[in-house]
Structures are given as structure tokens and as C-alpha cells.
Image (cartoon, rainbow, N blue to C red; front, side, top):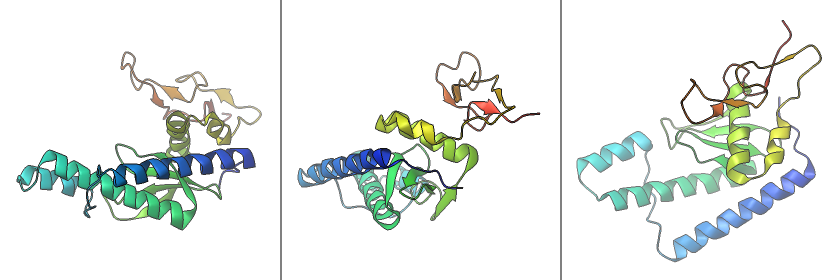
Length: 181
């Protein structure tokens, strides 16, 4: 089920998308980007280890490809990048869907996600964009539900005690609450 995005949040997302595009265009004009090459992350690593190109060249080509994919997804789906990721790039569309673009990671498709993956994208997106209102899109606890004992309602927790970094909580699907028993 798509999330309902309030108009003020949609306005902030659109403004951020425009700002990010302008930054990418400035980098490109300054010559910081290379020509994009196809291939996912694994193919890029193989290319790097083949010795056919320098680290700087391969990295520049991969980043240029990521920017091209980002522009394509944003335009085609009226989407907003939430997470460039160490994994699939995650987007929120203006109609409330969460998409993952697998092309740059390990696949060649764009898929709609829900549950834990969608909630995680919103949490990471709120961190990355500083648009904390994205967290309000995650469903509120229904009557009879209980606070998640792993994350204590924060939606994020250390995977194991002492890990040092909090990630979206998999115990509660990153909602902060558990269904009534």
C-alpha cells in the first residue's frame, strides 16, 4: 500500500531533488565526472581488478552511471532518492511507492518494495535528506500493539549489542511497534 505524502513534504522533496541535480550538473561541468559505463557493482569491481583502468577512472565511470540511473528513475517515476546505498538505490515516488533500483548493485531491474525494506528506506532517507517528516509516513501503532522490545520504539537498533551503529530494526519491520499478540 503506498504511503500518503503530505504536500509540504512533497515540496521539500522536490526542492531537494532540484538542488541535488544542480550540484551534479556543476560537478559534471567542472569535469569531475566521467562518461558512464554500464554494469553493476560486481562488474565494476571485476573491471577494476582486471587492471584495464585506474581506480579513479573506474570509480568516476561508476558514479557517472549512478547519476544517470538516478536521473532516469527520478524522471520516469517522479521519484526522490532516499538512499544511494551500499546496495540498491532506494527512492520514494510522488505517489507514495518505494522503489529499489537493482541495476547498480546486483541486477537489472527496478522493483517496488514494502514492509521492512520500505520502512528502512524511509528511515535512511530521513537521515540522508534531513527531511525527518519521512518518518511520519511509517504506519502508527494500532490499538493493542506494543512497543518493540529490541528498538524500544526508535525503529533502529544495534544488530547485536556493542555493534556501535544503529540500523533499521528487523524485529518490528522498522516500525517501532509489534502487532498485538
